[in-house]
Image (cartoon, rainbow, N blue to C red; front, side, top):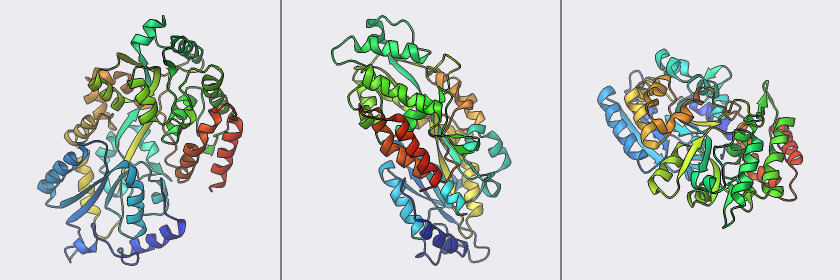
Length: 421
């Protein structure tokens, strides 16, 4: 994720504190929209990530409801995931942040005191309803700044037809079973591979995460980076073995992305297994090209399966006079008929306890919902995670090349994380 330089952030931090005048003015909910008495904003701006073609329609309808309830105007701007990092960074760098920003990282902004905490803008009832795992991931320095908007969790997708042809009666529950099953599927020939492995730059941190948590590893341990822990090195060596020694993956897994690589291969019916999430189910159900099923991830030793999850955030920037309007935004968004409608339409998972209850009737989501309360997340509460994530995306894949060295790659990432560079 593109980020501001530390200097520019500090300059704009000072500007925000005095009402967004020193960084080039602003057009969102600022003193420009104040009523001239208390400075209460009557218009606030939302910059939201585009999850699907239906995202804009939801937020436009939400803006209508917000207007009806509060009398305030919500200016909605929906931006593609390809562009939102750069566009939002530019807005903030120019001293013109939106009032609400929907993004997947928040901690560096919280560190620079640009954001409202939940104590400022979230009602106690709303905060109490959030799933604790997401409260933890949205908390920096003891306060909740990253209010979750939706979530996803990963699981193992397998091709039932290929499993049957390979004589496999059930999904694997251990890594030994996984390796054996992947070999059986690859042995079918015809271009079939046992496992579609995406360790390319798009989201290699996610692929590695779900494997490492199922071997007892993590990115941080007791508050310190543990990227090159013995468990993590063991995990990456296992993934390299699948790719190089066993040859049960597609070619170049270290350069294969998720959406246009591994998912596409599984969707073509040529991969026995892939790690996926509920939006992939929606695509597969729509195409009906693959007869598939979803199972919990296998663990290294057969212990209880762990799942890796992702949540994005609705963070609120401090701007003169916008606090009440921002609070009203959250009050409305976290109403069950709003937040659950959005999540269901986008094909993701809930972030609230009441949402978990609501979605229990969705049988296709059962495998995810069972593990969601104990989901493992990347350390988004660490302001250094953005840089670590980028380094992982750029370098992790090289470890599973024929000449790759998992220990060396993880040592370099550990060193970079500890240096903060």
